[in-house]
Length: 231
Image 1: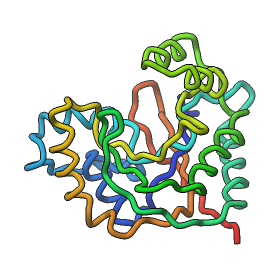
Image 2 (image 1 turned 90 degrees about the vertical axis):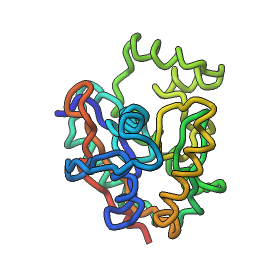
Image 3 (image 1 turned 120 degrees about the horizontal axis):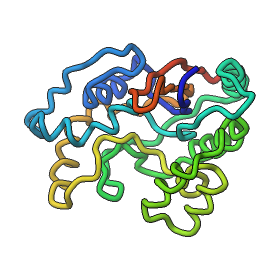
Image 4 (image 1 turned 180 degrees about the horizontal axis):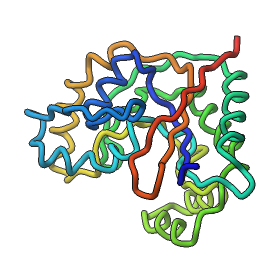
């Protein structure tokens, strides 16, 4: 059994966005392959390693339900069955245009416009899989609370174990750690250019993915994809 599980969206493995994101982060979480990120001339290799280390550990993804330990009495097989059943009821839908943008100093791939279907999927997954989530420890709650949460985000953290859910959720695929203010615009422009071919044709949302953290601090791996089978 893994230490933690996470319910993510990942681009289809055949889509250019999957290769572009995995290359930038330096690894493919599905195959375990290490990839040369070739960050120059955008950044030096030293700066690149520093700004992508956290994102690379979690793998190229967009969060639907944040990492959690399994609740007592729940097993990985239970979670797998529930994910299969959930995906069987979901209908594929189109993505709005995707762009590279800054989120509070982090650079990420985000939707250029609201996508109600995507927001609804994220909310439904938070609710449907809540029974699988073990309560966070006091240390985990304190770590989240140190991030300057609003009263509403604190309420969501207390209820769902994560502050950026429901109306606070926003689709994003993290590219960098928080950057110095003077670096944001330059790197955003450079990454927008680098990712332009991969973002030219937005992917179809047609599956969800189960990621696992084998042990504390280990890189997350994409364990299994669950295709949508609704009409």
